[in-house]
Image (cartoon, rainbow, N blue to C red; front, side, top):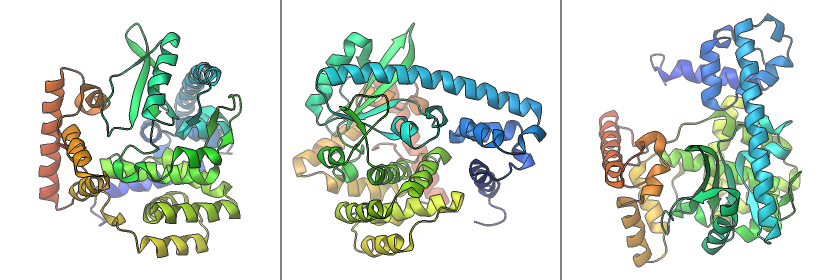
Length: 387
C-alpha cells in the first residue's frame, strides 16, 4: 500500500478505533460524526461507548458525541432485550419438542464472552440443527410463535430464514443452518455431532440449546471471516474482536484442540490468515507454537489461502468440493438460477422484486464486478453469475 493509496486513512482510522476498544485514547479526528459512522459500520458502537465511559477521556469528549453514543447504547439495549426475549421463546419451544440446537455467532458470544450481551451487536439469531429434515420440523414449531419461513433456497444452500413480521416490518429473523458454513468447500469441516459433544451451556437457556466450545467458537469465527473474504464482504471490527477475545480466553488444552481440528479439517491456512488480520488491528498475541504448527499444516493443504478473494478460483474449489458429478451439475444450476428467497437474502445488494428482475440485477452486478477486476488487475470476489 503506497502513501497515495486512498485506503490508508480508513485503515489507520479502523486500527485507532480497534485500539480504543482495548483502552487506548480515542483520536480527536474520531470524536465526532466520522467516528460514529465508522463505529456503526464496524458494529462496535456500544463497545466504544463502554470503553470511553470507563476511561478518563470521557469528560473531555464533545457533549454531542457522547449524547449520540448514549442514544445508540439505549437502542442497542432495547434491541438486545427484545431479541433475547424472542430467543427464550424459541429455545423453550425447541426444548419442549426435544430439539437439539447450537446457538451460533454473536448471540451466543454475547452471553459468555462479552461483559454484557448488548455489547455484541447482532442482526439475527443463528441456530445450527442436525439436518434438513430437522429444519423442516423447527419451521413447523416456530409457526405458532409468529415466524414464517422463506421457501427452501435449494439443496446446496445450507441455511433457511424464518422471519417474524409485524405490520409488514421484520421484527426478528432466525437463520436455521444445517451446516456450520454455507459453502460446499467448508460445509463438512466441523460436524454437528463433534460440535455438540464439546458444546457448553448458555446462561438463561435450556440445556437443549447450547453454545460452541471456546476452541470451536474460534474456529467458527475464523471460517466466518474466510467466507466473507470469499463472497466479497468487507472486514468488520466486531468479527475480528470476537477472534481477539476468544484467543485471550483459550487455555493450553484449547489451543491443542484447535490445532488438531484445523489440521484434520484442512483449514490451518484460513486460521492463519484471520489471525494475521486480527493481530494487525488488535495486536493480538497468539501462541508461537500454535502459529508454527498452523504454518506447517497449511503448507500441505490443497487450498491456496492467498487466493480467497479470487472469485474464479474459489468457485472452482467449491465445485470440486461437491461430491459426484450429478451433485456438481445441480450445484452449478442452483447458482446460475437461484431461488427468489436466496436472492432476497441479498436485499442490500439486489433489492426487492420479481425473481427475473432480481436475477437480472444479479447478472448486472456480476458483470460490473468482473469488469472492475479485469481493469484493476486484482482477482477480487464477485457473486455475479455464481455466488
